[in-house]
Length: 347
Ligand SMILES: Nc1ncnc2c1ncn2[C@@H]1O[C@H](COP(=O)(O)OP(=O)(O)OP(=O)(O)O)[C@@H](O)[C@H]1O
Image (cartoon, rainbow, N blue to C red; front, side, top):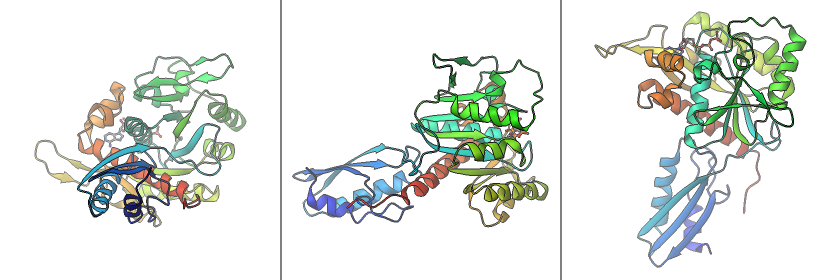
């Protein structure tokens, strides 16, 4: 039985992003008490919650203020909230990772975001929709794997590093070029989304080809994307193209969840001096969009990708990995806010 005083205390604790209290958000699973000890379980809206430490401190302070309580035991669970109409059966969020230009690190960012979310405990899929230049298979260390079909003749995603992924790189013989026109691309995207055994997913991350072409349109027409993330480097020539990608998503009514500035700066490992090679901070000039984070140029990001393990798993303590993990958490937080602002209050 929940204790009325503990519950009342929790009603004073707001989720820092949603600005509503934990009780009315339906996040309190347990709020009971034995004499002087209180037991609270908070069900977060994502296991990658960027504000878990703040929530924990606020809950502790509020419950310790209840007369007679001098011990608080806090437990966390997490259930990713889906929007009112999920994009695919069993899939709560589909997030596209796009860029204006090629080579800005979009696939690297997509792979690391997916890996960081999976590491936090979320169920994650990664679709390599960059059909002309698929690199996800290689970055996940499964370049030579081939996709199999299940009994229902659906494609089985490949499992690596705690997540499931599909890439044209696992369907085509290595080194062969794909020569497809729009309609074939459209049906390939549909098959990747609908004829694959993705199973239950909290997040399906889609790595798009660079630019504003057929694949982007097909994707937006096939599923209701929860949103898009734009990856750019900070220099003007990249930002001009990134602005075009932003415009395309806006025209397709896809919410932009934020911008990632990759190759933002470089810290020389021998001297510790920071160089803003491409002009750090450029992404903040992209039409008032929020910046999810800045990732430094780091040789390990490239080496880890070539070795088949995303940096957030291979070198979690590096500055680049910490930035990428924070970006994944910020994104998960954004998705929670988007899903929860649609939900009615729990009384
Ligand atoms: N922060 C970084 N530090 C160092 N190297 C990076 C970083 N981000 C990406 N790279 C490297 O830059 C190269 C291009 O990255 P990636 O393939 O992710 O770009 P992309 O934008 O997806 O390219 P395209 O869309 O043209 O396929 C890769 O070799 C990758 O390992």
